[in-house]
Amino acid sequence: MPSIDIKPVTAPELPAIAALAREIWQATYPGIITQEQIDFMLAQRYSSERLSQDLQSADKWLNQAFAGCRRIGFAFCERDKGEYKLDKLYIHPDFQRQGVGGALIAHAAHHAKQQGYPAVILAVNKNNEQAIKAYHKHGFTVRESIKTDIGQGFIMDDFIMEKRV
Ligand SMILES: CC(C)(COP(=O)(O)OP(=O)(O)OC[C@H]1O[C@@H](n2cnc3c(N)ncnc32)[C@H](O)[C@@H]1OP(=O)(O)O)[C@@H](O)C(=O)NCCC(=O)NCCS
Image (cartoon, rainbow, N blue to C red; front, side):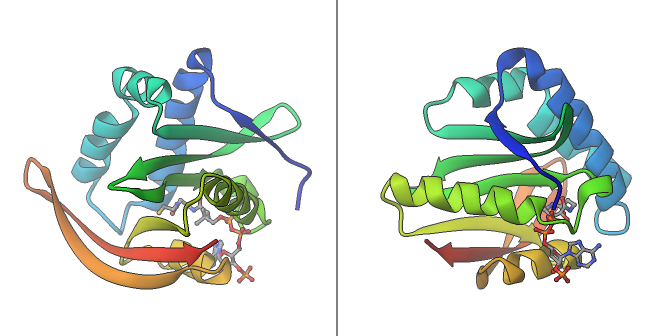
């Protein structure tokens, strides 16, 4: 694994996070969801207004990973209906499969445990095989299967996975 630093995200870094998200989403989701759904979800979740709100929320924790001075990924966690949720985990393709995702999962699991939560949960698209494999490798198991209407006719067809901490 490259030597990485995990640091909290700050407000001036949000445009760089949004740009990194778009790059990784475009490398990941074509073939899993339509381009229209990718654009809709990026606008919904990574607009500057939405990211600023996330950053200011006491119930959300936004972290990013650097290899040297290069920003290579991010992990956003939140309190969701009383559970600790890993809401976003994205690693740049140049740095995937080198343990960076695992390091961010371990960081989140440690934080969840410190905060007194019994587990970390997440939602993953059922056709995102690479991510599902990674989550199994890092101790998650499938808890349930859900379909969520996210507006404008788009549906998220996900597994909810859980890792005890
Ligand atoms: C899923 C993701 C976060 C995992 O992080 P990572 O740093 O790549 O994963 P790690 O190096 O910690 O773990 C490696 C394991 O992940 C899985 N994996 C990662 N990349 C893979 C690939 N290209 N093909 C198949 N499996 C892959 C494998 O299980 C692998 O273990 P192995 O090498 O022993 O087979 C990362 O690949 C990613 O950002 N993918 C694109 C975006 C995404 O789908 N995010 C999750 C949204 S819910």
